[in-house]
Image (tube, rainbow over all chains, first blue to last red; front, side, top):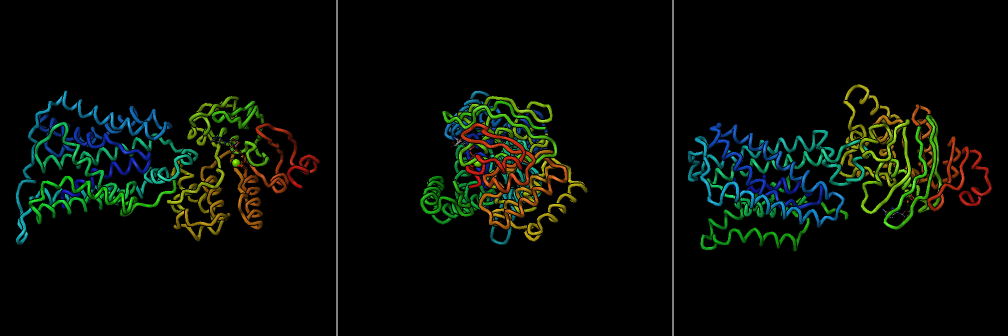
Length: 282
Length: 238
Ligand SMILES: Nc1ncnc2c1ncn2[C@@H]1O[C@H](COP(=O)(O)OP(=O)(O)OP(=O)(O)O)[C@@H](O)[C@H]1O
Ligand SMILES: [Mg+2]
């Protein structure tokens, strides 16, 4: 379950950017990786309390997301979509290799704070408190996301842009600010997901973003890409199926990563718009 | 108020406008008529700043609004100066409610008492929108969408509203309603640039009119005079 919510958190960033720019931001997974290093250095070098480090990492990651958009994607807004897509792949490689150069390829042990360590027992079931907290933190973040998208001015503009990007500037809205905000918000959520991920599997390395990123992407497609709450549901479904596979068919547990792609293929074949996806008139 | 001088637009080889000049004075209803493909929408898009951002298009000429050159400034800045467009095909946001569509129009305004009273004013103009306050824009009828698009433009408190074919696809009684509203808005102090193919209705409410043909202004004059002009009668009123 907590695994699913993590996929969901990361998937929101994919889906929000796709909803607005129709761009699959391949760099998103690597942005998430960077966030774990921000938190890592916050804790290890600056001796910050873990939650302060996490919040600072979320802010830095948001800024990184905005910088990537402004630096790499903004010049291509009017270019064919494929150029932005290729650029996204390039940015992804850039971040991964930058990570390898700066942080080294050696995995580093991530810190799991005291309160996330106890194992709680509910009847027969033992759960790590981190898993329970992960679900709670995600729920709180989702409430924020809901409020921003449905109750604020900028959220209204985001929804309007997702359907009619040409008309929104006629309302005096600075498109670029809304897009930057979207990248910032998606990246901050990926940071939250990434840091919780790093606490769950407490080691980080520059290529760690790839698998969670791919699965979050599958979650986003599963839920209907462009739909924020679909992304969470997609993440949830993916996480639960994965855990069930491992629990009931331990002999197949080596295939858990393949499962995501199987699901992706099935969704694309039978319901390309995903579970909650709207059929977009193109 | 608005001056367009020698405006030319090229869409990757297609010459949509060739040296169009026109002028809209404060307080006027000014009309631009012309048949399909004459370049009417291109003209309003150029004024709103939407052409320069399009790939492959070339724009030249000079557009000034209240003595400020707006030819090269971004779309959202032009809107904030008070030049607001009601686009062709209404372009109501289908996934936003009626209320949110109106709020989008007043995006940069503070939500003060003036904002609330403008919403009330729009509902007094268009009672049907009030009944559909929380309905999604995409579920409205064509006439309702046109009213919402006009209401949305009013929410911006514009100095100049440019309406691109507001009567298109509407039933005759709704067309009359829309033209009445346009006159109301104008008498409340907003200048209007009306784009129409419905030359009869448009010219009869207009102070001044221009006739656009294949990217060039062919005729101009006070609305009533154009209505009596033989060439206009033959080409557009026949
Ligand atoms: N985005 C575009 N790319 C290429 N050509 C275009 C584009 N938009 C318009 N044109 C061309 O420019 C010319 C003028 O088009 P415009 O839309 O301004 O006409 P209009 O007078 O508004 O017509 P209508 O009454 O049909 O709305 C047409 O020949 C059209 O094909
Ligand atoms: Mg047109």
